[in-house]
Amino acid sequence: MTKKHIKAHIYKKRGKFHIGKYDLRVKRSLAGLGLFTFSPIKKGSCIIEYKGPTLSKKQEEDSNSLYLFEVTKTKTIDGAVRSNTARYINHSCRPNSEIDIYKGRVYVMAKRNIKVGEELNYDYDTDYFEAYIKPKGCKCIKHAPELWVK
Ligand SMILES: [Zn+2]
Image 1 (spheres, rainbow, N blue to C red):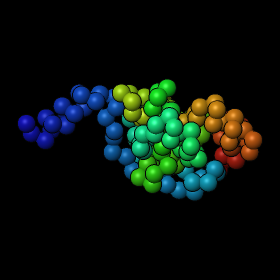
Image 2: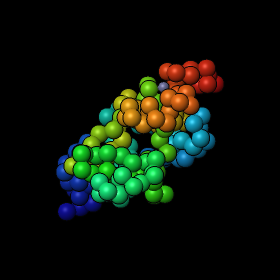
Image 3: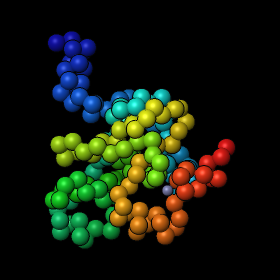
Image 4: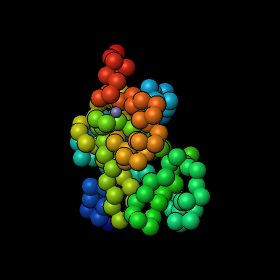
């Protein structure tokens, strides 16, 4: 098999969850640090995987991590590890990306075409929003449009 064939084979196997090669950078954003793209991203593309060790129910209950991601009723990923660049993606109530879970793994997908220089965001689950974002006030484009005017 040539390199090209191998690539095509991998793509076929992982389909839409094949992670594209994008120039993603962590930068200062309205909510602390955020993840920005310096490559254009097409709607429906797989941008990045949300990675980390899997915790048991017990470990999850004892954890103080703010990066817990419940994949299934019994599987939770702790995304606090430094290598998990996806942890820098902030919440938005009007996001350009969304989460898709496939075979127990968590992928961030482009919800629409995303332009160079845009900060990536997705809608966190309601529990997190209620506990950590709402009390401080949501800084997303929907709730604080004045912050986003350039
Ligand atoms: Zn909001």
